[in-house]
Length: 114
Image (cartoon, rainbow, N blue to C red; front, side):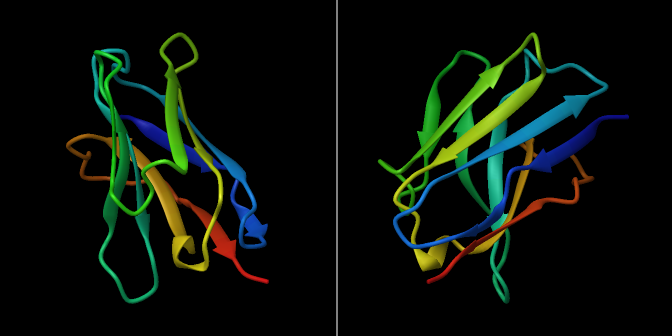
């Protein structure tokens, strides 16, 4: 059983930064493509950034140039550095495999507001 634990969210003003962390336990990690997803109130969960086992990174158009995803296979951890945050980035952020496992962690709330 894989466990996903996200942390690092919080309340930040527009233009601010946050760094999210995701600790993965159980299962394999280095061979998996990993991603950060988010779900805003009333919206479906969406994939915003992915980092593949090859190291290739991909981003959604709404976060490109502002967010950076990284991983450490030895630590089984994935990070999401979020800069120039906007109110529309407000959501619960989750990490998961790409494609996702059937189960999810608790997520971490990011609120961007003045």
